[in-house]
Image (tube, rainbow over all chains, first blue to last red):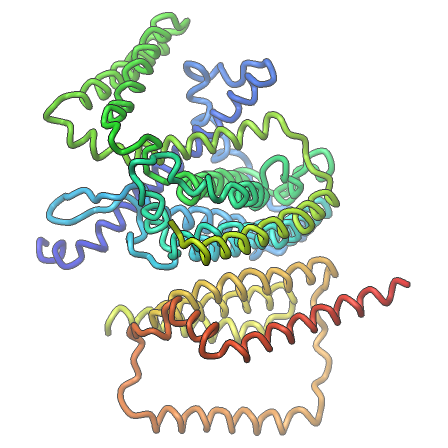
Length: 408
Length: 167
């Protein structure tokens, strides 16, 4: 048994990592729906989900159970094989793409093995290309779902989505070329390290400042690739019922839903890694006092949740919320302990990366709450006539600057 | 059997099955899907040989862009199941001859090749991104630019032909 474990250690570690990341991503997805409904509701002066559990926190669980137990009819005349393949493909590709993202620079030393945060090895030379390859295949999930449903609204949605994704993939790829030129590598870890060349500059050393144009193009194209507002034409409910997933019910619909939210997470991580320094702290390296920021956030948050829980109406909320608050407060205090300082050091990188990802997820929700949908011709004109020339101009200017002054 | 060899056989079988299925399938979309399987399996084979960049580009360009256009056009035209008409009488015998000739040629090449056939990673300058870019933009820059020019001419030609019908 021990010999087997020793000889297959890498394999076992990877499988455990995949299972763990899958669990985390699916949980985050579930609570992202809660977060989105809550934030959009408050933007529109509503309450959002608040019946199931304290502050509606068990709503994702209820939704999940509902998805699982709903009747799952297959419409007449569908192409059975493709109809079942499409949601699987969408979900599988979305989940695969997140395995490329590295979540921290330093490995955990456990059982004599260096365990890196993230599934792909940190020396994966084609990191960003692999991500684009998976995104490129992601179109099929939507397009095939639309085609195989044997219904006119899904077909229109599928057509729109293929046209939109072909158009915006060009700008998406071109807009990161500037970053790749600065870093001189496709490797995501190298791209982050290239932004840490001047640790005393902190936030000013990130790619966002020389590459602001690239970032704008990248973010817009990425929102279009994930089919989110204001680019959600494939599922425009006022025109196409529900677009490509009209004929899908129950868990097959949930699979499209999870795929969409997972790609939101991937795109947010990419924005953070490519343009906002990934796991780097925005403060200059000499400001070591910022290492107490996780504690400074955790302790007040925990205390606030305890206070909020005690005031809560239901018995369940009175028990659960203070419990969660106590755990957070204790975690925050524990990070201040002198003999746990190495833990504090270790979580700095994931803390910053996750905070940045969270900010971008909030921007996604924010846009959903505020922006109207594009018209189809506006979408095409915007992609081809504005975004693509801008991103190409960005590549040319960046190349000349690097040729003249070198990549800092 | 090493894991590499196992993966090689799985991918090779997928590629061949996809190619056969591409011909046999009656519906255009199913044929296009089979072609995607072939493309992705080929990308896997490149990855196995250590050519990461070529593998990624294979999926982005062939698996992504080109096949999406195929699927898009099939969906746009709403092409149905094809009727199999009787095969051309002239195409049969020469086709069979070609198949035999190609199989014989491949067999002869494989039989003649010295050394064992291996699917292990070959790390070299050829397969890395840097090696490829050096080759394209330094050693073969004129053929490369000429090819780009040819493609540009083809795009402009297509645009002109499509525009002419309107007026």
